Length: 333
Ligand code: UDP
Image 1 (tube, rainbow, N blue to C red):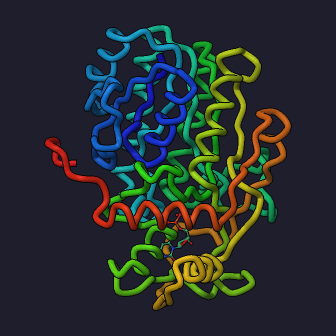
Image 2 (cartoon, rainbow, N blue to C red; image 1 turned 135 degrees about the vertical axis):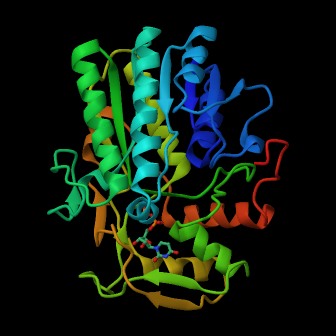
């Protein structure tokens, strides 16, 4: 069985869907702070629990025969982490330690970890490879960096097998339109633009147009969530078959888009005009983050298949079908 922490969240729910399609048995552990009960398929065992509660996570390993853990449960907003580092250190670091300790007690040795390109901070190179020095510039990035270090140390001392996956900017939704991105509050760029174009927000705010980039706005490498979870599937299979271990991979496309370019793409696809408001830079944002994806291609044999247009189309489809996001269930999520 594969334990997916954060399996009711945006990326976790897409992972669960893909694992089920590949006949893995799955169990979800999620505190529903960001996730949605409605995104969990009915037949999948779901435990509402918090990683900061050691007993709750320990019980899961006692009850189920778990072969590997895919750890998605974490807070992920760069801007929020600058103002609320306590939340990020508690949930992302202490939560991880409880999980690793529970795995150790149960002798579960395999971990796929959701890391981030935020570990690289303000990288010196245009295309970031995995050997780039890790010097995060936000508390969020630091939680991912410290998590990587903790996992590396547990691996050396206790024989944990792991693969770290460093995500670039994840966007889009599954093709069938049943699961998608529904963060409350939403801080990510593409959903915010689409929400605005849908009439749910009166404008789109761009944080900073004085960056040292072609048009002054930040450049990011956007990756389709379907591609991203496929990268995880390849990593899991390699880890379970003992082909790869103690490795880190960038999951991105290798192509950068400025914020203005993303806005223009969204306008073209939705055939609507955006109203842009410029504000000062958001703390913690580096100007340029684009992946060198060679290592993932060579070793994982994985490459992103979808383009920016596919991400926007699929996200738009999801928003049109679910104008108010997921239905609220009895847990209040
Ligand atoms: N951004 C923006 N307006 C928004 C949301 C994001 O200008 O409403 C910018 C943000 O400052 C960053 C880029 O878009 O430069 C990507 O931000 P996002 O929050 O989507 O992802 P992150 O890079 O923080 O993981």
